[in-house]
Amino acid sequence: MAARRFRRLGRLASAGAAALALLAALVPGPAQARTAPLAPSAAPAGLDAAKLRATLDATHAAGMPGLYSSVRDGDRTWKGASGVADVRTGRPVRPDMEHRVGSITKTFVAAAVLQQVERGRIRLDAPIGDYLPGDVSGERGRRITVRMLLNHTSGIADYIASAFPSLQEPSADSLDEYRLRKLKPRRLIEWGLEAPPTGDPGAQWSYSNTNYIVLGRLLEKVTGTKAETYITREVIRRAGLKHTYFPDGPALRGAHSRMYEALYGFIPTPRDYSFYDMSWAGTAGALVSTMDDLNAFYRALFTGKIIGPAALEEMRRTVPVRDADGNVVMSYGLGLYALDLPCGTFWGHDGAVWGAGTQVLSSEGGGRQVAFGFNLTKYQELNGEGRPIPHPIDNALAAHAVEALCGAQEPTATAQMAQRPVRVTPLQLQAPRP
Image (cartoon, rainbow, N blue to C red; front, side, top):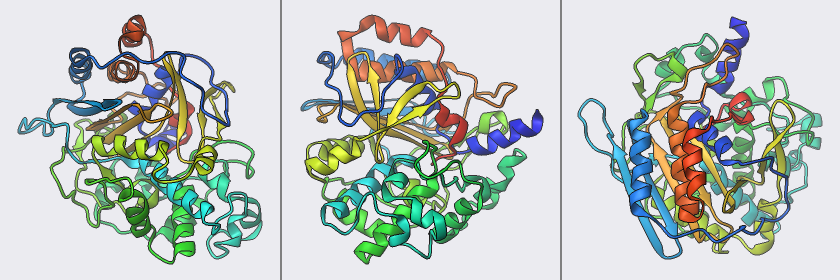
């Protein structure tokens, strides 16, 4: 039992556990894979600054050191923060702080790939071996398509357990030892391919950061430039973002919070990992951004400023994500996913790296949005099966998201959200993820 528990912890190690539990809480019932977004069941109500502030304060009171949020409704914006950026000095958090946003990077990468699809340089259903025979060779190179990498149905395993082997013990020793280590994308891909496949290509959804490292290599192959450089020029700048970048060292450029990792109690006093080389995440999760910038990016994406309607429709063509019992809990497209809330369907992504968690959700056209970040990750404890036990922080974060996106339209839903248990999604059970 102990060995199985520790193996599962290794797979969980970089999961955005709080954000993922939040997602499960937001899904009111079984979702269905879809080829187009569903229309909202009703228009969300306006922004209530007092209630939004109260939900942030409730999350801080539940144990989150600090968090910040940006909410948009049409041309109206609310921003708020609660708690501290540094537990030692008491320095307060601010809404405009820079933040490591983890796997939200994947939406940026997917948009860049879709640009190249529009230009005829990449075919979504072409084998990846046609483009990168030296990276993904043999039968896998012939069977795995670009689309399978984008929607996590490739069957390629994640590399995180190999990159941080102490997580199998479990301990944070390798996290500390490798703070300043630089890794090449090819090594990350090799680790993913060396691990046992999670399934046959195209057979099932299984989250893997390796997929998006391969996609970064694909961008470099077809554009002739470094993936991060291309994404900065053609996605970040096109969206008009001022505080979003791939870090070139272990430090963030602007004002930011410290980032505390608890590793499900295996770090008894949460440790600061705000100074960390992010080459282990690369095009799978290294981006730094702000909450305002994230909302601006998704609005630009959903209003045609980055890719055209046909490419956006491909991004919203989803596959089902199932839990251990086979129930569909969410729908995953090409670098983004769909969740059904009481007031309609919202699209976005979450992300987590050591000590920093983020969630972004946006209505179909980008009219109603929330982006929030928090500075303590994997704060839950694990049960006897090695699965996270829901924490009051999870329910408080869910209440904030529902208030931000649905407002007063569903007043009882927000209250119920703060009371009911949070279900854990299969993302937590299979997906180490930046």
